[in-house]
Length: 440
Image (cartoon, rainbow, N blue to C red; front, top):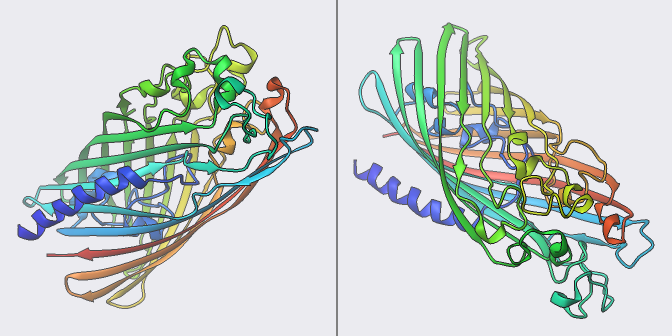
């Protein structure tokens, strides 16, 4: 019990760090592909495989198949994002690379059996997707589009002044209870307690199309709390086939009042409903093949669903921050994942995975491109990793993941501000995970 109490202290400390440092992540919009050591090694394939303490993040019913354990991990997240504009015939034809290129991210989970039917656990994990910071500008005085706010400063990539970017961080604390209804079937429920913060800066050029220009940009970090639930089922169908399914409700969040003039629907930024199904195929005692499908309903959230041009085309009827105000033009997204685990020896397990999900923005037209300069999303991701049992109750985990380079371009929405041209984003991510697992 002393170890469990200490682990709880670590969870609390990790939550504080995550709340300060959660960065953008490619793939799956701002949902990362997987949480915990085994999912990180498997490109997020985790609905019916990967029995670590992060069941709360994928399928809470799996907790019944997890022995007592503590998982503590650190992710080195290394994104590269570059934007450029060409063909506008203005000083705004330039390129800029985001300064945020290395983040250290902790994550933690605890799992414990209560008796032969019930198990409990808690996991701490985060999401992000809108953390980009571009310092480039025209280098020419008096080229911003809002001299009343910016004076004679050079214009940035979005015609405001100073650095330009978004910062979204989301942290989930997920207490979980799992019930083994029969020897072969389990059900679980997780309470999703979410903290998020948001900041936007450098968007002074868009004050004229906002319903509340004072709550549009440069107001520092605003914070919000919210809650939702996740429920799941896990079953051993045959000796060689396991299956699972989970559903997460929309997580209802407090509004970002300091940015109600930017985010559609008055600063609301709920987490979208999502669900996943998966199987684990075990052809023999040493091999496991996992297959997952995940669906994320981004289109239910106006601050993600609405088109980029909404407020530029109709600033009176659909100003920024209104229910129909401009957003990212994201569609609901389906992600397909596959993974293989091989027990090379009694102490060494090798894992690898692949995930595919189309870009969340609906198209490469002016109704999508400009704001998605802030939110790059990879289409393909691959992961490789291993778990090495040091002693009977200790394990080291390592994973490397590559979010493959994505490049897309299209006409700029800034044509409505007299600039236009073609904008292009280039992004890729390298990720390294180190984790330690303890079995009492």
